[in-house]
Amino acid sequence: MDRGHRELLGRDRLVLDVRDRPGPPPLRFEATDDARRRLLRQGERPLLLGAATGDGCCRDLHLHRLAGYRSPLPPLRSAAMRSGVNQVHQYARWLEDAPQGPLCDGRWELSRRTVFAPGVWDVDLVRDWPGGCLELWCGGGWHGVLPLRELSTPDAPRVKAYRKHAREGTLAPVLLWWVSFLDGWAILDGHDRAVAALTEGRTPECVVLTRVVDEDTWRRQAAELTEECESRTAPLDARPHPGAARHRALMEEGFAHTLAELPYEASSTPSWPLPGGRADWDHLAAAAVFQFPSD
Image 1 (cartoon, rainbow, N blue to C red):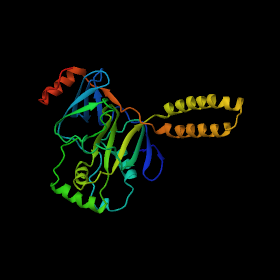
Image 2: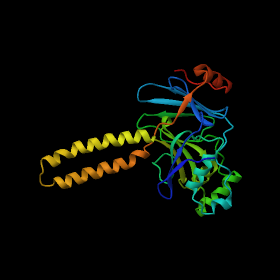
Image 3: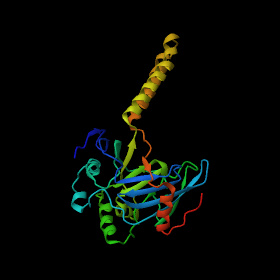
Image 4: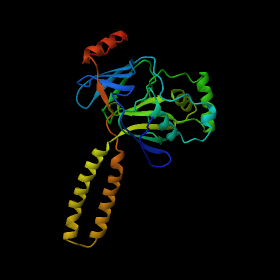
């Protein structure tokens, strides 16, 4: 498979420029026209049903997940975790070739992350199965972690094996997918590794997959920012005064920093139209024998 362009941003950060993939990806979100009903599908299998309630800045997203999720990564063996391979780059290669992953045309960043805000991995980790309720956008958003399969118990055999790796510092990172309309992350791979790290009192090390802005967007933003910078620095040249050079240098430094980050700003997570719209969603919800709140 042609892996397309890869932009290396250091040892633990890169951007994939994915091109020429026809249609939606195997793992994809679908939505009704009003975006109040969501469906996560892998192939033809429904995995998650979501219904938004509330209006204004505060909404709740009621969830029901179904069994059957399959990771886009191959199983990670103990020897592989101890091999010292660069896991950000390894995960990128696996995702590009995955027959059941979320990559579609566009730019995707993968980066290692070891520090999270307080509450992400405890208060806002959705431990309930199969249901759940996310408080979105109220007080700054949800910003938690959503498992796509039921979490194992801390004494499950695989978790116990991973706990040893956690103590040794050889546990492979969890693969998270930043989902913009959830204002949080979904676990793509590493559910048992996450449980193992948490059981050992550690924050799971992660590789985060994020859709970032396309080239046309960030180049247009860069041109607009450059024009703004020139308009704000021009008066300093027209009317020199003591300290003008220092003032100009600070402004240009700030603009340069902003320009450098424009290509890597998070973009919205794609959703595709739900075939059959609300009626299709209602049918799936009824088949799941789950009663969602009404609008």
